[in-house]
Length: 184
Image (cartoon, rainbow, N blue to C red; front, side):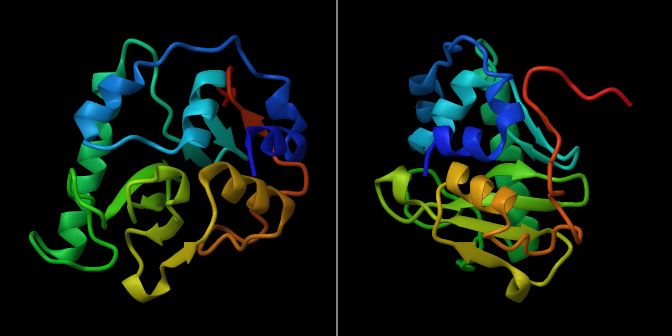
């Protein structure tokens, strides 16, 4: 699936697209030690952020703030060490730069639900999504053979389980904020 299919599933998202944003992807790649999936880069270049049904937030880098984005990603990666123990090789352990295996976060909820990519090989467009909750046992985590945008599309269409997300999330016509933050 693609950004186009995500827009078809979420028409309100399409309406919030901006002119392409110039993100320094080579800088992010150097800082993380790996390129990121192409569909995520396309999403990030079209939207300032993505908040689905005021609950699931995609971590999108901002032009000129790539260092801040990378620091945040590394901070979330290091938090996985607290779950698995430093230096262990748990299947849901943290990504280590330059190595296959481990998880890189790309979305989260305020309840500690995270969406990760499992770094499986040199092609980031083939990385599966791993769904987990920092408060849940590892056994409750799930791996979905989808890209980030196809995962979100399937979630919105009800074709992919929320794996620990609240019952009824996302709603039948989910709210989506990609250029304006929701009013409280």
